[in-house]
Image (tube, rainbow, N blue to C red; front, side):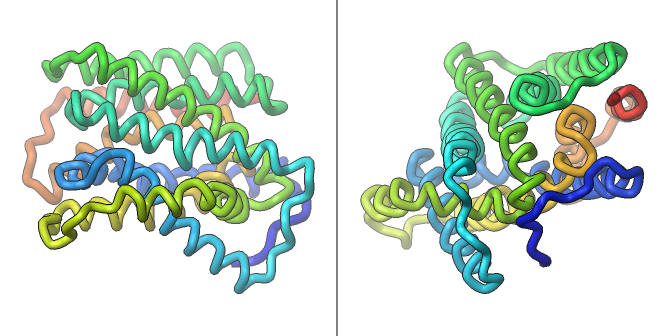
Length: 299
């Protein structure tokens, strides 16, 4: 894991391809986040889960920064890091965990379909991305395919859960875009590590204050869920994701998130034996075409 504190040349074709590979790895890791969160909140309070995953991951991130002797962020990078922390360290994990008390993980996939579009919008507002008009057509079409597929599955609605998920997606898109922009000068894994460290004065004390009175009553699935969202969703996934966004472009690589619900369903089919029907394969093919189209018209 080399240091990437200085500015990197992200405009070459090789960097663009690497960005898509890194972004895809990040999406694969994030695909298990909502199911793992759903498992964890069976026994853990959502607020405790949020601060615990951030505090533990922050300790790991601090250790990595110390081992590689990374320089502290400069003053101009502190505020962007705070935005990253607000979006992906606290905001999205907390709001999505609260939402999953009212809706199923399948229902939450409706909103994951909106995340690429949200990320692209913030990439334009906060970064230098200026995609071709055709990019927006493919982006919107892909989002509609995912949302339409989710609704076709006969999901139930909860206004409170829907509002929480919508706010979670907005904060997540902001955190993704801001982190990708910062990754170009600070480095991908450094961004999420420093964002976690900055959050620790808030998350670590709350973790101990909100800790369950009896850990013996926590089930194995809840522990597995906590371990996954801490190690993979909160740290390892972002190492690939932020680097991918910085290399390939926030708006372009962000479209890979359209595949996240289908990766999640594929994992369910493989691990839980759930049926994958022809409609799912058809919609997945359509989404892949939209991702390919958006990549073609990135600039």
